[in-house]
Image 1 (cartoon, rainbow, N blue to C red):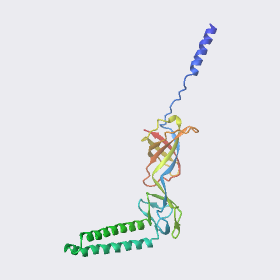
Image 2 (cartoon, one colour):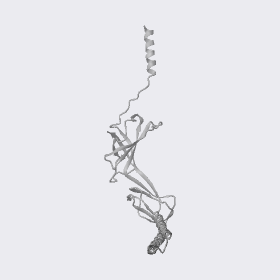
Image 3 (cartoon, rainbow, N blue to C red):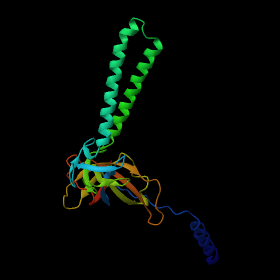
Image 4 (cartoon, rainbow, N blue to C red):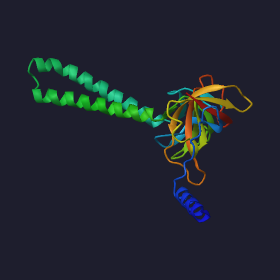
Length: 247
């Protein structure tokens, strides 16, 4: 009897040894995870064309709006080219008007009239090109945000490098690293409560916009991004926080 019982016990242990292990899925609701508040965008502002900086209209810490003029480059040559193109176009249009009466009296041919009108059209294109070259000497902000750094000032040469750095802090991004055991329970669109460290403290609500689909094997974690509105710029970027997900 003892021998039979021992054999059965061995068989049960052998079967259980080959059963796959099942890890219970954790529930992220109510659990706080550590996060970091970051700008949603960081832009290095550069110039399309090389040149000497004439004026810088903002300083570090200034708030700027999208389309606001930040820097102008010296543009004496470009302004002269615009004036020249405008003068040529004005002359060409007067020439067409003067010869219109001759055309009505059939004193000039259709071919000559077409040549003059084509010359005027080419002058309009040349003026447009000259204005575009002049506009490239004015550098505007591509985003609404805050000037983080200013690298160059009036009188300095700008080439391929950056003139200043602008951070977009509305909205903010909150980067959260969570354990792989909660993978599949956090989804895009899920709400999140963000508790920044003191100061400024307080509680803010955001929404999940990115859930990484690749788990880091070394740490057993994956990343989640929460987008956090910051219309009054109350929250600064670069602070740590606690994040709780909920439905």
